[in-house]
Amino acid sequence: MTRFGYVVCATVAFTAGLVRSDCEIGKRYCGYNLLTIGQDYLDDMKAALIKDREPVDVAELLTSLFMCKEAQTESDNLEWLETCDIKEWQICTTGASEGDQCLSLM
Image 1 (spheres, rainbow, N blue to C red):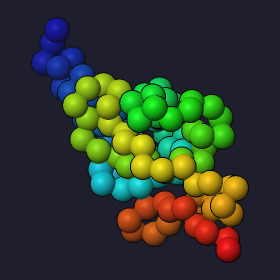
Image 2: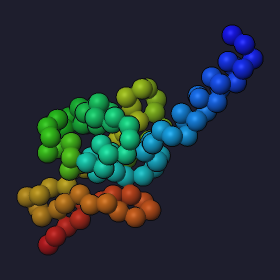
Image 3: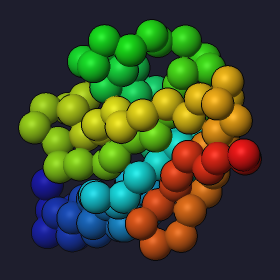
Image 4: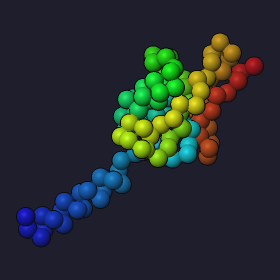
């Protein structure tokens, strides 16, 4: 490979890292928000639910709160925190600086 080729490869690798949208470590996310931030977190969300013996279904995936953390393995960058329980009049809502939260409607 020529010197120019190395420069092009390094530039592409660097800019690819800048464009990728990751969750912010230490921030809480509703499941539905994780699915929209630009990286496929579905498998990570399922792994977090399975790890805590929670049901893995669409409702659980979308209405659960997850914490983004430093990954120990490829699919270990999310921690399940809780599911916002519609039966108790809770919804998962987009929050401010600390992240999303379960909001009680009652």
